Length: 207
Ligand SMILES: [Zn+2]
Image (tube, rainbow, N blue to C red):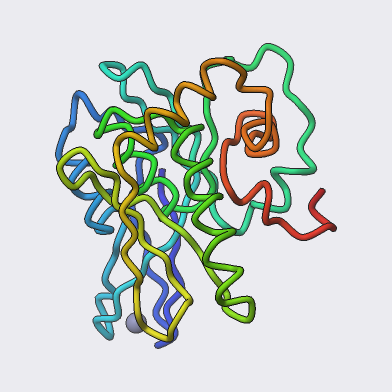
């Protein structure tokens, strides 16, 4: 569908964006999303690069995944949204394109969303203890050998702290998750179709 992008230079331009994409049919999207190039547009008048977030459905049938991507701006509306009747149970939600990139990375690496979000939560708690005044965020990045590599933003300005979680810790957490995914922290990481550390970190007005 056509979407308008207003630029600071007073130019408004129209782009054609898909309402859904299929990563099996178009594997180049995987690389685009991981590289942060997905849905980037350049203003023809001033050359500024725009990274707007439009809602989109991402299908990845070979991985059994169906993802509803909401813009960061719709985060508040998501929590207020009523549970839709007849909603496809396998439809998972991510909010913001950076979360989409992270989700695609962990699916590609064959990891469990619930377990990765739990590991992010443990890393966040540790980092927050040593740096309580920082605006911290934790992101799954990639696998390094069998270990999982996470990035922590906000400990120091413009610096990313790299943390490695050994495969054994992932496997142990996966075992806990399989035993009882209704136990904490897994239960609090999940709100409706949305599994994210953001569910635990959201301000009270979004609870
Ligand atoms: Zn412009």
